[in-house]
Picture 1 (cartoon, rainbow, N blue to C red):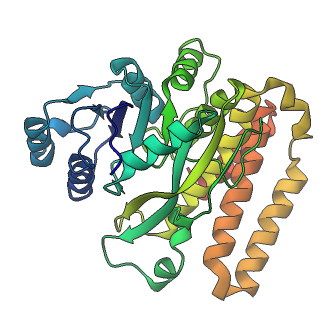
Picture 2: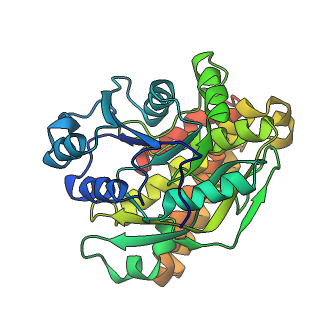
Picture 3: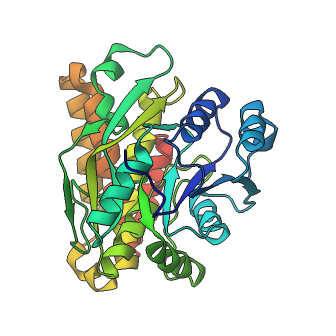
Length: 337
């Protein structure tokens, strides 16, 4: 059995008002990560939760039984600030980020060690197999579409292509990143070179994962997926609803173009013209027509519209178009933000 004595890891958990029943499963999984006790450090970043996460019984127990685990509070709201705090508070050469609704497989670190050792040109690895588990009863449509919450089973692959996002580009769920990439990313955040934010409060904007990967690519590293790297994604009832998914799709789509022009300023000319008011109203009209004519496809139509509107809003914002405000106002009226 492979050990990780030759490679150290930081496990970073950034959390804001976590659901205790999910957090306890993550902490239990971290505690049982195959015999890694002497070569990892663990940091739990409480990102300004309304009630101290340290007071939760599962966290109190976790910190008692694992002497190399630490708890810190990051008062600046937002996942970006929490991740930067984790980067500055730790020293291991590889940082593995888990959300508070993740549950990694027991061999997670062993798999990562092998791939980081065998592929020194890869700077970011993500789990190729994510299994969605609904922890509460959900409507049949959600049972049929776990991919909406990132369920995937991908083959091995990696790439080093700037200013793009492909099927082998890892998102933040359980991704592991070389420290030199994270130091470059954190420095760019602090200098104001990168300002796209991750989730913050109730906002579901998501650009930090993308920009971390791109910072690695700018350093010459590739990023990829490992099929043997497995993680469960635990979804409670409050997320297993169409309203949440629409906001998620809008937030994700609206983040891409602004993140792109921050990371690769020379690509701003490739975005093309911003959407016009006529195009915006045509999109809205097509949406309502499809909703009337295809009632059996309404969830997919609503998610596609949220993504399209988010993409247009992000496009307009990246180009500093005055139409960005109009698009945002429309999104507000439709409760997408």
